[in-house]
Every structure is written in C-alpha cells, then in structure tokens.
Length: 411
Image 1 (cartoon, one colour):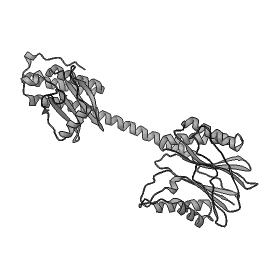
Image 2 (cartoon, one colour):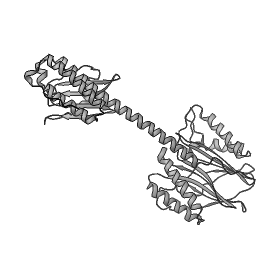
Image 3 (cartoon, one colour):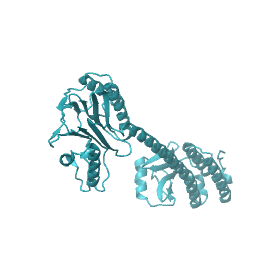
Image 4 (cartoon, one colour):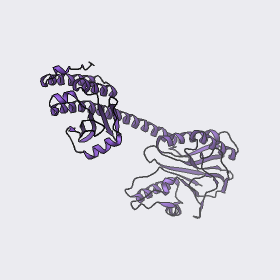
C-alpha cells in the first residue's frame, strides 16, 4: 500500500483537499482488498489524519460487548479512560454526526466522530486540535473523516464477523463429529437372551453429553453393567466419558479384586480431571450361575430393583463419587440375590430432575409408581412406555440435562 504523504500547509485549499480525499479513499479500499490486518489499517488511518489534518492526537474506541481501545495517539498528553468513553457515549447515544467537544472534555480532544453499523454504534473516533480544521470548513473535513472511519471500521467488523462465522461452522462440524463418535460409545444393541435382557434410552441435552451406560462381558458366566454421569456438559464431559469407557473396559479385563478395581478407576479419573470434574457411577457384576449381583454405587442416583411381586429396593451401597479425591476414603460393596422376573432400572438425574411447564420435577415418587405399574413388561416395551411418559410429562419444556436410562430384566 502507498504511504500517505504529508500535504504542506501552504498548498492546503478546499479544492486540493477534495482531490486528496479521492486518492486517499482509493488507497484505503485497495489496502482492504489486499487483506491488510486491522492494526495496520488503524495505523494507516492515523497517518492520514496526521499528514492531511496536521493532528497528532487520535483515538479509536470500538464497541464489542464492552468498549475497547483500538488505537490511541496522544503525543504525550493524558488519555481518556474507558469509563469516560462509556459515559460519554451514554450521554450522546443517539448522535449520528461529528460533534465539537467542550474545551478539556475527554482530555483535550476537540471532536468526536461516531461510526455506525446497521443502526448500532460501532465505534467513536476522537480527534485533537488540527491545523486543517482551523483553515478550512470543519463540517466537510469531519464528514470526510467519518467516511474514512466507516470504510475502515466496517470493513474490519465484516472481516471479524466472517471469521466468527467460519469458526462457528468449524465448531459445529467438530461438535457433530464428536457427537457421532460419542454415540458410537453408547451401545445400540444391548444383550437379550433367555437369562436376561437389557434396553437403553439416551437423550443428550445438546447433541453431545456426559452420560454413559454399557454392558461388558467378563467371562461366560459373568458380566458387568453400569451407568454414569459426568459433571459438566459438552465436549469436555464427553472426553471424560470416553476415558471412563476405555479405562473401565481395560480394568474389567484384568480380573482384579473389586475394591482394587474401583480404587484404580478413581485414580485414573482423578489423574485426568485433577478434581475439577467428577463422575457418579453405578456398576454391578452379575453371576448367572449363582444369580448374585455385586454392585457399587459411587454417588449415583440409586437404581430401583423391582422383584416379581412388585416390591422395590433402592441400590445405594458404595462410596463417594469418582474423581473428586485422589484416593477413595471408603468403599463398601452391595450384594443382592436376584430372583426370577426381577427388573433393575438405572438412570441419571436428568430423568428425575426433568421439569414440566409448571417447573414441577418428574421426581422419584413418579418414577417409583411408573416402575410399580410397568415392571412386568420386557425391557424394550418398558423403555418405550417410559420415553412416552417423560415426553408427555415435560409438555413443551426443553430438556435441561442429559437423560440416560438402562433397564435390566433377569428372567
């Protein structure tokens, strides 16, 4: 880009200045087309005002949620604070044309020029004393400065908005990919045979969530099923969930003592999150020969065990949540002998805390009554009816959390 040469004061006439305006505007548009970075454009703007107007005091303040200083040249004079700028704009929030300022207002600047974009004030330009303003008509000169400022700042704003849109599209692609990968970690086909059957429901809050459930076979006579809820939302929670899935699968294959396994899993989660995120988990190992269920509840919503006669029991025994402490302070395992036609419903708190239009929560009482009424069904029908029930309950309220449900029936 060409440099902006200083015009000798002796040559300054209105006609000369008007010719210089056209050349300057052409140079600026060429610079913008050449993709000059914002700081360089601001510097070019200052050089134009310095060389053509004879001022060495220029300030550019731009609004993007808050007022920010983009350029400030004061020639050693005091600079206005951002609070002064904010208060000034509040007082003159509707001005559209350049204004002359009172002496010593805004630390000696003599003129303020607004820049609008789509009817919103985008920036203000502060101008100090100028040789040219004292020689020629101030109105035409200030309007010219306003045109230059609009060209530069609106171009920069459009580039910023375009960049933000490109970044948003890329982020949307990343989230969509992460959602697809996460959905691959949630099993679609859960086991069903003559001895037991599983069905699941997974409703992520915003396409990608922090809930997890699975059924992991240990050997021909034993398997482990689990459900977990990772604190937080979005990609960060999904990454922790992926680590949980990988770590748990690896530890189950080592055939460790149960207490040691849960301690090692906790240490693994803590090494990832450093206590900033945690996991509530319910996991149970079932032996099909002895019909023994050994389980751990790590701070999770207690699953509901419904026996064939409709009696209910909540599976609460366990320890504190995982990942909050480097070492689990205490672990206690629960144990149940599972009779025929027993159903266990595992769920995350997104289900019980689901709200309707009256901000009433679905709650444990409603869930318990649902289980009492529908436990004799197979798990596919049970989950289908539960999905219909919560959809009807929430009316037109949006989900406010991930919802995951794992239903198990022991035949």
